[in-house]
Image: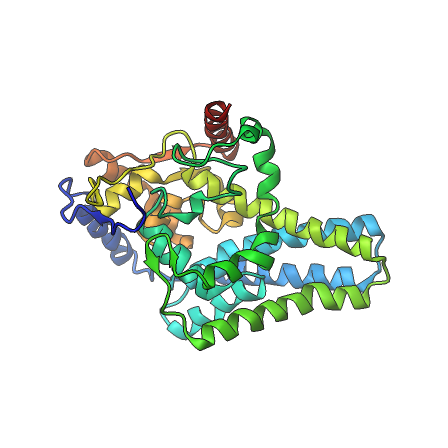
Amino acid sequence: MSNTTRLKFATVDTTGFFTALKKNVDQYFLEHNLSKKANGLMVFKTVFFFGGIWVLYGLILSQAYSLPLMLLFSMLMGFFMAAAAFNISHDSLHGAYSSKDWVNTLLSYSFSILGANRSVWLVSHNIVHHTYTNIEEHDEDLVVAPGLVRLTKGGKKAPIQKFQHYYAFLLYGFASLSWVFRKDYVKIFQDKIGQHETKHYTTWDYIELFLFKAIHYVIFIVIPFIVLDITWWQFLIGFVALHFAMGLTLGLVFQLAHVVEDTEFPEPNEQGNIEDAWAVHQMKTTANFARKSFLATFICGGLNYQVEHHLFPKVCHIHYPAIAPIVKATAEKYGVPYLESETFIGALHSHYKVLKKFSAEAA
């Protein structure tokens, strides 16, 4: 089917699943007298991850440590940058951090400081990915290094892909470098992302792209290069190491949410119809991992609870561990799948098997 066809989900959820689920989740917040937005733990995480970035930045610029330690600090800073994007930027971009729009907007600019672009993300992720999850030619999150990594049966085949289950993880490490220097510039000038037209960008959106990219470059390239008493190639190693740690963390978490063995890749018919209602579609295309691990949840910003996030993107992720049993029980009651891997390693192995499956097809 052409990607110019407008997709339509079933307008009626014949299972009754989402109507019942919304009622059950709303009842939970009402009974416990809780806001669906950030709480004290969320504020702590904000300070911890954002603060950690700048503490590590300061330690590197101080030059009080050996080069191997500075390299370690760079990689750790990349990890903290990914965690800050997961925990704070992501929630605020969904309007899930605060009930006050100005707070969400202010915090969402952290995403641009970290090297990405909030305006492009609001379209490519909030609208396109969250609507057309795992639908080929519409969900561009399925496009990873075209020609090198194939994640869907309709993806272009290439002989080298028979080895993709070995090298794909290495390529994930370069995801943030692509984001910082290429991806946003390309997407903001595209007429469409998937089927969604992007002609609505304002003059400020374009100014914001170049302004915040410049700010990022000054903070993470110009200042360190000027201040640090190291050679250009030593700086380059540290810069790439930072982004490799950041990119690998980002890439793995996003892939484990949608490209594992049990997730589906639904195909619309010639009229552009998806047989399921939107919520049921999300349940079939999205998977959790390690949801009983406090550490995984703390680091991933609740993205290991991807099922809950796709159903309730405007609820702060700090509440996902509490509402997950409600989602699972309701899904079981209404005969809707609830996909999950018990551990991070289990999800990683499942993703590896998907890569290997498509590598065999390429071979």
